[in-house]
Image 1: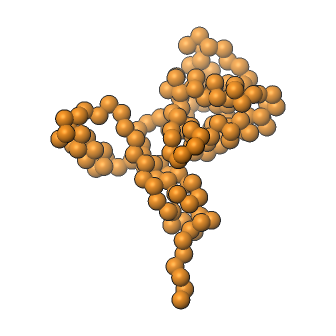
Image 2: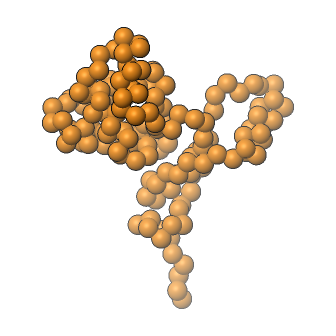
Length: 148
């Protein structure tokens, strides 16, 4: 993710104004962690600058996506989440607590390309989401073994 100063330069290069709202949304994305919803970004941005509408947050998120600074991802049903990691990667998603972990595996990528090619396709874009129950002790919904 770019620094705020780098983002300001990108906005200016594209003829867009550098506004407090755009900066607040960008910095909220940076501070939010991975894959926040627009509502999560809104809460952080509001705490930061006080006056911002949810519409401005959505508009800024979509502008940042248009610039290639973030990607909208649909990891779980419901609201889109925004990913600041714009390099290709895949996701593991806990179906119990919603935790998301990013990963990249070159062997999986090769296999996907081969599967597509064998069927007469050339991949132009793809997303892989693996849904599971996480085994991390911090998951509040972790399934534990029955002690009996």
